[in-house]
Length: 486
Ligand code: BG6
Image (cartoon, rainbow, N blue to C red; front, side, top):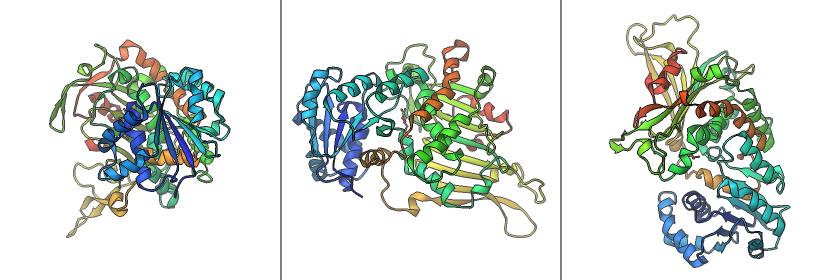
């Protein structure tokens, strides 16, 4: 399906995000014929380079960041025909007249993507409003949207002075992942799971987003941010919502977002006492990932010496509602872990009374698991027990294994590609609403407070492991273990 006619205005066009994610995603959409043929991309930044030099940079960068196997020089050449460049100091109102004059006045959709520091969101919106007709425009905001509840409110207030909520597209790229949407299909397209999807049947749930990468070239940003703000407040809590929400009445954007909001609001508040027991922060030291030696966090570029920023965090959360009361949700994310993967593990309660002998050393729960792998490959595995062939009744763990990548051989859109197409098409369902975002900040606020205090300095873990030992202890205290430790 193609988009309507559009002009896509990309602020921060010379930055890392634009080069590595946004332009390659638009390129991919272009190659897939998903962009309307005369849709144009106006790139904006304060760098004093002309359109020709800018396009040269894009054409140099595209091969490295385009989806594997998709890049061709003809494809790139036709994509570059859509692009124009304008130099603009985002804080200077008088420079916006030039920008406005480049926007066609033919009723096409205008999408403003702000891939800039959040401190520029307010001046960009204000200055746009002074020069451009914005009644039908959309603005796409990239995370981080603030670094706590107060600062996110300040940003949201400033943007709201110019754009109404249904013109604001807050990106959480996890929502654009095919595998994350597949969670909705699994839960709400099949009647099989719903009766089991509740406290009566489920013992606990684990959500993990593990990365092999370190902080790369983002040391300065990351050291001021940490894993809680970078991954938990947004991606992990959004995943939690997808797992825990009630069935929405439709896939309408607000129907889905209302249900996610209910989950966020039902999260049991963390008190000072809970924090010590229920939150583990870690920071990697030098080690090896996939056999390759890597430096410790504090040796990375632009990290303050003695930094207390966490590169790993594990939490025990609970949801105070009838469906989930008392079910532990263990959330975990970290950099420089053993393996890159995102996974949801749902462990069902053991049988009420065992009449069949379990294999030695195997707890009933291990075989009672639904493991939804979101990346790198997408799969759904049901771990259960079967009878070993032969005499007697010996049970053995087996796995029902569905590899979704194989089941659907076709190309799957990258998360950014899908989200950008949705923004151009005006579909808000996969974007985060203000109240959701603020509810998520509200819940993490006590943890942020804890992070500021020295006694809770992160515990060290060696790069290439699964995080600090305290992370395993967080589960073992409740009688569980992380999936890979079973
Ligand atoms: C981003 C974080 O939002 O998500 C990065 O800022 C992180 O630190 C990235 O590496 C992970 O995304 P993905 O899609 O690679 O799992």
